[in-house]
Structures are given as structure tokens and as C-alpha cells.
Image 1 (tube, rainbow, N blue to C red):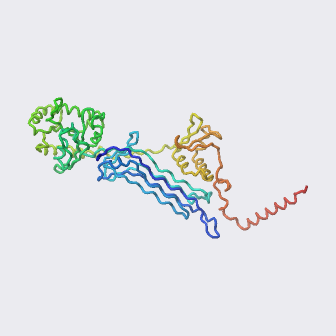
Image 2 (image 1 turned 120 degrees about the horizontal axis):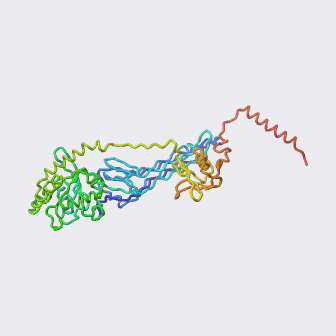
Image 3 (image 1 turned 180 degrees about the vertical axis):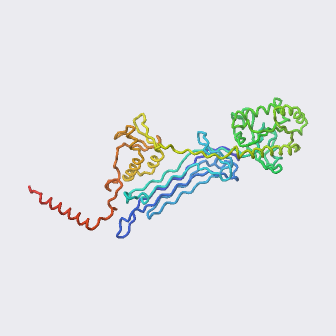
Length: 479
């Protein structure tokens, strides 16, 4: 049964925003008391948050589909809908979030670090919020926006200071078990270690973590064995330790050739692994032949510039010197890290001439409008309500969409699509359209809520109407 998962594909969906409410306040002797429709609630977000108590992505391997709750619709009496609850997903420290194309969206390191994987939809405005001096009683409300739905890939890269790399059965698990309190599975056959193991080591005043990275063999960087699955766990480590087996029973292997093979795999994998500080550990010197071989290859390794330590995980010899040497390298790296990894904030302001939308003419003659605002407004519009459609036309006109369509050569009756190809609203364009609110006179005005005329003005108007009717009667000629 799988107990450790370090890569999953997660399907997340945020909550939809609640619809706004179109309502008119009514009471005795006051049938039109004004709009009082409340706004819809915002949909819940899907948030990934680092939790130190979580060490694997196993939970999302079994349940990859996650959805936040929707916002509630608004109600009359200026009652706004309840917001949807955010869905917080705990992930291990060192989780990298990528899209389906492999682009990094977030690198989550440190307790509490969060990333909004899917953003909840906005709630629609009720007609009370849409009322204005020109539009005193809107007979419509805006729809809630759908929440984001996307597929993301989560990859776990172990956060450790030191990585033990080497062939299977080189003694990495045994070494980490005696240097720390970790209790990995240990056996005398290859690929005993199927998951990275972490151990905490204390050397003087320095405390650091050591990771045992399994499965490195020739071709690991191309996916052979388990190497490709776990090489990512080496990326964050500041120090690499080559654990070389000096007592191997395979005739075609020796510590120097093992080192060359692993170095080549690290170089091919990339990520700057070939430039990390490293040490060499000649393990299993408790075996007579192992000690002899260690003494033979040590001068050659030192001539290459490596610091070499002869140790025995079984006899626990040479471990103190190794732990303090690693502590020195880790402390040195930590001292440089604030300068090397200073936080960078990149600000990309919009261009001063950015209209917020684009109009393009496609090969079939269709004009396509793309932009955050036009597409959002279309999603918020109830196309079964003529007044709502008229409100959308007003917004698009004020944004300058109609003027850009005319510049692009659009004529009355041409097809216009707002949105992407797979989810667009297509209509026949009519310049200066007055759809919506015809019942209210000019679009957006409501004669029912006009300010009352003074009494003298009402008397003059009535007298003018009587005079006009009398004149029409006098001019009437019977057949």
C-alpha cells in the first residue's frame, strides 16, 4: 500500500458567487418604496497552505478533486448573501505548485506560506447597489461570477540542509539512522529505501537536517530506476554527500566509478546540483576489504579536491568528524543565504495606453473582444432581462468597445464575440443600440421616480393640456 506520494495532479474548483437580488421595497400606501435587492455572496477560495505536520501528498493522491462552497444569493430588504467558505488544503513544506504545462505558479516554503490555487467568483450586485441618479429603480441584478476551476500539479521537494546521494545499498539509510533519531527501513537488497528519509542532526550549536535520497543509478536523470522520482528532493539541499560503498560485491563497480556516475546524473538533471558544495564518505570500512579499498582510493579523491571521510555506520566510527564538517558547511551557507536569496518584488504596471481590452477580426469575419472587464461583465449579465442587456451595452460603450469595433471596420449586423472561443457570447452588432429599459423612456431613466413638479407648474401643465384639447375640438370638421 502506498504511504508516500510526492507528486499529484489536483483538480480544484472555487465557489461560484451568489446572484444579486432584484427587489422593490413595498409597504402600505407606498407600493414603490425604492430598490432593496441585496448583493450575492462571494464564492470560497481554494487555498494551499504549508503545514509542518504534513509530510506527504498522499491525501490528494486518493482524493484529487476539491471544491470550495458557493456564495449565497442576495435577498430583498438589502440583505446580502452569505459568502462561501474558503477551502484550505494543507501541504508539506517545500511543495511546488505548477500548471499543466509545467510552469511554476508558487513555491511554498515555510510554515503558513499560502497560495490561492483557485479564486472564488464575485457575488452579483443587487438592484439597490445598481441604483443611481439616472437609474432610480433598476429592474435587474447582476449574476454571480463562476469560480475558477483549474488543474494544478503539486510536487514535493524535500526541505533539508544535507542530501545523501549514492548507489542503492551504499549505506545511506544506515548512516542517517546513526547520525540522527530517524528509523528508516534497512535491508541488504537494492531499492530498500523507497521514500526520502529525513533526520535531524545536532553538531555543537548547529542543528541541521539530513535527507536520504534513494534510487540513484546510471540513467536516473532520464527516469531509470527511482532516480527521476526523487532527484527533485536534492534541489533544495545546500550540501551534497556522496556515500560510496567500499565493500560492494559487484565486480564492475568501485568507489571512484560510482562517484563519476552519480556526478554525471546530477549534472544532467540540472538545477545547479553540480555546483553545490560536497563531501565524500567512504562507507563500510568495518569490512576488512572495505578499509583496504578506502585507503587505496582516498588519495585519488582528495586529488580531485574532495574532502574525504572514512566511516562505518555499523561500528559508528568517523561519524563525529563528519557531522561537524557538515555543520560547518551548513552554517556557512546559512550565513550567505540572506544576501543570495533576498526577496524580490516585481511590479508590472499596466501600460498607460492599455485600454483593458482588444478587438480582433478573425478570418471568418467575426470580431472578437477579449479583456478582463468585458468578459466579466458578460458573465454577470442575465440575457433574459432586456434591461440587464441594455445595462451591459451601456458599460461596453463607456469602456470604448463600440468605438474600437467601428475602427476595426465593424458594420451593423456583423457578428461580435466577447470571450474565448470555447466560452464566448456571440451577437449581431447594432451601433448605439438602445435595447433594454424601453419601458422606462430613455435607457437607464425611470419616470416613476422623477422628482415631483411644483404645484404651480402642475396647474400650468393641466391648463395647457385643456387648451390643446379645446383647440383640437374647434378645428374638428364633421363629414
